Image (cartoon, rainbow, N blue to C red; front, side, top):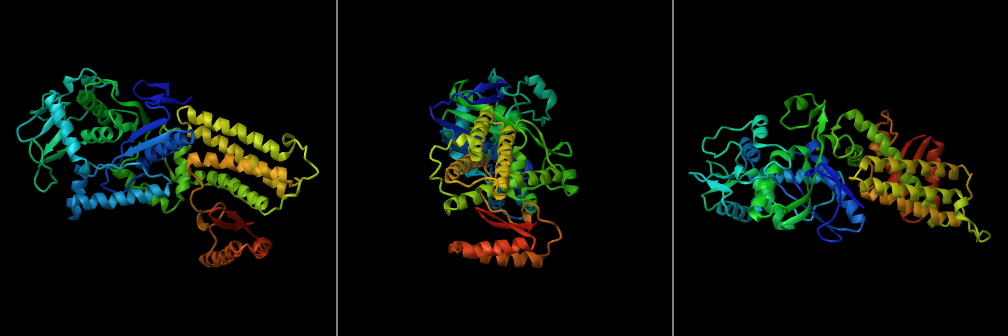
Length: 508
């Protein structure tokens, strides 16, 4: 049973999919007018974990995430740099994918763009005009009439009076109500424009997500997500215009899931916050990835429950890197044990056919692993509590390291029955890692755990040559040479760790 906190009801609800065994998700994507910042990254990492969890739980997932590639900010950036709006959008979409790939965010099934969904947007606006929920002004602007729908404000739980008091509403005497919002903007000089029944122009912000989500997920779909700053006005307006166009108050998204802000210095991370950027704080994802591995950044974003605010700082990145190093060490230890098992280094247990695994050290380890895996899934089933789930994985990492320490110290007899159990423990550990989305890329030597600052470029270069030679030996199954290199390095005070992505080293 999976429980989800629904912003609409403000309670945890038991998830009931619209279609048995299937999950449909729409997440509001970025407006690619510049490089994504860390606040942009949080919802995409969170939804990546959610879809991984559903897939691992046996669901077929359809995930849609848009790009708002036509927008005031994009046009402004294009004019500033003397290029087209399309140039700006394409450049920053490429940067977005590069950053998300580094964070192990798997690609959505569909990435619709405003510029490619214009016919659907125009048809939806026309439907709203025909039904009396929107009106056309002289000059070609089209506005949605918020007073025409009685449940307007049900997501944010605001009345129109509350909205007026708390919003900075541009004065426009042509609107029927100050909170009416634009569905279509008439063309202005030197701006991109498309033909429509009301003249050349482009869509307002909110209508695009309604048109794209309905086009690719249907009139009803399971989840709609994004940052909590989108609850009002963006998601409120999406609900109003979508349900008005469909004529069904129960249509559109069934569960609304919003993540908390990322804060820097207790202020929301924002590209418009000049003070944050002037302090030379790590801010954009590109800047952060230049100093820290993507999987460390991802782990930091998941160590806080998605609904809670997350204070972001470099000191927290350092802590996350240390934490990740401990998780990775257990991973490397399991890989080393698995290699020994496959190489036949575990003693044949012909005399122990009736051996009870529960009394062996490995048997106890797998029992603990099964228990922690069950707890891991329970945490994820309780409103996708990654913070708690990670603690169970960390607990298992400690158990693995303890076992590995006893094994290498010769305190455990390596019998084959234990080998089968260890492979199961590895499967459990990797199942947790797969849902969290870690251990999917190599860790550069200079970013591995316990690398000290005084290692020179020359030492790094020499170690790369040595490890490459050792890897060549391993690839050729020349284990004697590979082990000799490792043992002689160890004698010289250098420890080599074999990982599935390659070897790393650190001083003993």
